[in-house]
Amino acid sequence: MLIRLITHLLVTALLLVLVSYFVRGIVIASFSTALLAALVLGLVNFFVRPVLVILTLPITLLTLGLFLLVINALMLMLTGAVVSGFHVAGFGAAFVGGLLLALFNLIASALLHSRRVL
Image (tube, rainbow, N blue to C red; front, side, top):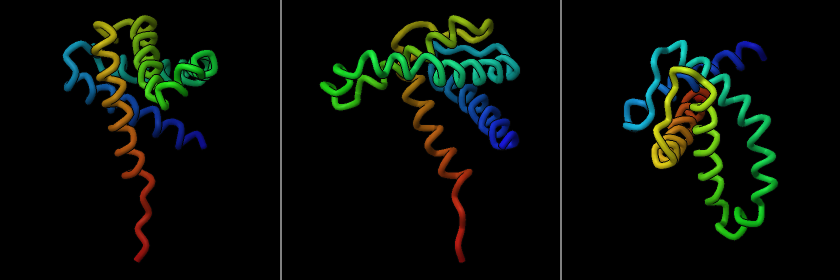
């Protein structure tokens, strides 16, 4: 269980660094900053995101779930506000960064959890 958590933290940190290469408004000072940002992002997603999802449920239903992308951007911005050395320039950068992070995370999860059956 602990190994899986550490692996997830490392992968998320690597993905944050990868996202910072693609999104001009996201800056990460070092890999240790990326690790801290990954940890904070995980905590923010665990504690804050569920509250926001419940509070914004009507608009999420109206937009057929697309408002969750806005919530992801807000979580990335909150992480950028808390972690020194991790800077998110604005909502546009956070939105694109959150979208890319979700896409890269989906790909990484598929690669890490795929089991070949011969």
